Structures are given as structure tokens and as C-alpha cells.
Length: 169
Image 1 (tube, rainbow, N blue to C red):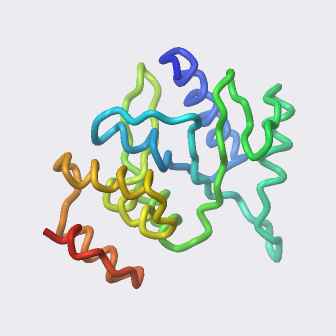
Image 2 (image 1 turned 135 degrees about the vertical axis):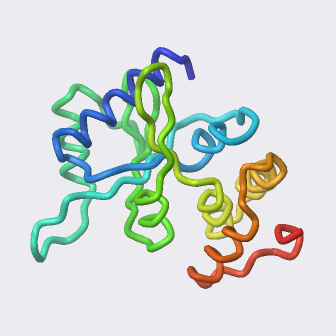
């Protein structure tokens, strides 16, 4: 993913927050991990979003997708192509994800503020869907020194997740 295109995607995310289409967001998965550890090859950008919810409404990404379409971004399967970058929007409804969005760290990316899930949350997210790539990403984060181990253990306990013994060392 080219730097210029990512900057444009991050600018579009900021616009969605400013106008209230999304309440907040955090980058998650592989692109989020590169803010803390070595670069990881990835096809897409994953974004957890909190959405404004009308009283009694059912959580739906449809209004977000409608807004993105109005901004000129086309759906491409489970992704939306924003300035050519495939972006997958994910609900921050599960408690771990909601907390990752609300405690997202803020980074400067070429003059644009970017919100990124904390590394401890990224490691635990890998536990929820433990594919080989996610386990490798978690290991990379753990080895990078970016993860606060006591905070990770506390977070895991709070969310009822058991850390593999190798992750505790």
C-alpha cells in the first residue's frame, strides 16, 4: 500500500468521524501492528468502528457503507475501495473491540492523526480468531517489546481470555 494512498484513506476516516458517520475508530489487524512492530505484508486495511446508534436501533454498518458510496468509494466484496485501498469495516460491538476503539493510541501519519488499537488488544484479538497469520502477528508484537505484559494479562483476565503459556513468558 502506497504512503499517499494510505494518507488519503486516513483522511477519509477522519472525515467520517468529524461528520459523525462513525463515533470513533481504530486500525486493527496487520496494518495496526506495523505501528508497533516490523512491517507485515497484508492485502487490506481493517478498521473497527463505533457507530452512532439511534434509540432502539439495531447495529448496522449499512449507513456507513451508504455514506462511503456517496463519497465515491465502491464496495468490493466485504471491502470498500477507498482511494484504491481495500478497507474492511468491522463492528466494535464485542467488548474487547469496543475497548480497543475507546483506548486507541493516536499516531501521526504524514500529518494525519491515525487511531490504532493498543498492542495488548491486538494480541488478544489474535486469540479470538487464531489463524496462523494472526498467531504470527501476535508473536511479532510480543517480541517487539511494544506489549506491556502485565497489562496484557490483566486485559485477558478482564475479558475472560486465557493466554497461551508461551505468551506469558
